Amino acid sequence: MTQIETRQPLVMRWRELPRRAIRATKEGPVAWFMPNACAVNGHAADGPFDFGVAVQRLIADIAVRCVEFQHIDVSRILVTVAQARGSGRHGLQARVTPLRFANGAMTRQRRGVPYHIQRYFLGDVEFLYVMTFLLPRFLEQDFDAKLVTLFHELYHIGPAFDGDLRRHAGRYHHHSHCKRNYDEAMVHHARQYLASRPNPSFHAFLRLNFAQLEARHGSIVGVVVPRPKMIPLFSPQAPK
Image 1 (cartoon, rainbow, N blue to C red):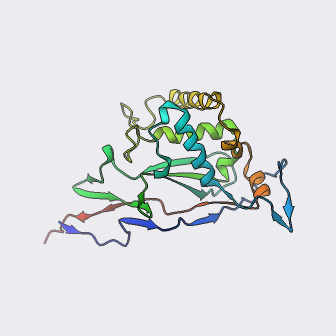
Image 2 (spheres, rainbow, N blue to C red):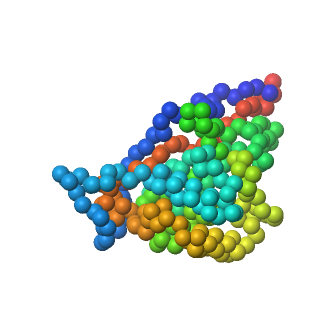
Image 3 (cartoon, helix red, strand yellow):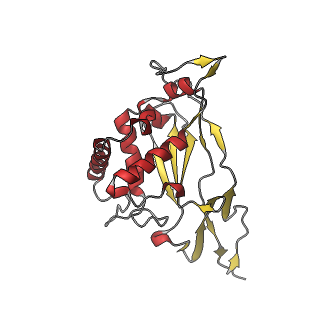
């Protein structure tokens, strides 16, 4: 076996997470309703809206209130954003990328080659999951759909919280054998959370679309990092 030379680092470490503003698409919606929107000297009063921070606060509250999600440690979930290419509401809304393999393993074999997934750190804190939202697309759903989408992604996180995804029996081990039942279960979890009467400030941002948030705050920013990659550590030696 010979080690593969790769330009991709095995460890990504930041002292401060890189953030950038997400732009609206040309065909995006109009901010027909802008609660508390006002400007001082041409600038939005509230300043840029940090989407990731808002999502983390909401996840932390869900983990406290919902028994099914109490295994979640929000400090080890890196919430990121990505620019959606189109203006439509349909398509990928969000995804969770695990930073470990099955049972929390650091490497796995594929065709005799060991693969290592990149490790992400903020200072000394290592993330176990990367949760990414496609904007503006995600924010163009209605409130219920946004909340259900969030629960959908959170439920993918393995109950051991070891960096692996939740695995169901059968062929479709990430969504179970019946997607309809999976979706209905996420609706139940979302309704159960709202029935616990959480502080409205935690989920208020989900009641606004992209244009409304942008009009209120001037811009919407979020963490943008490369998607984690699986890196081969060795390759079979070429025959002589």
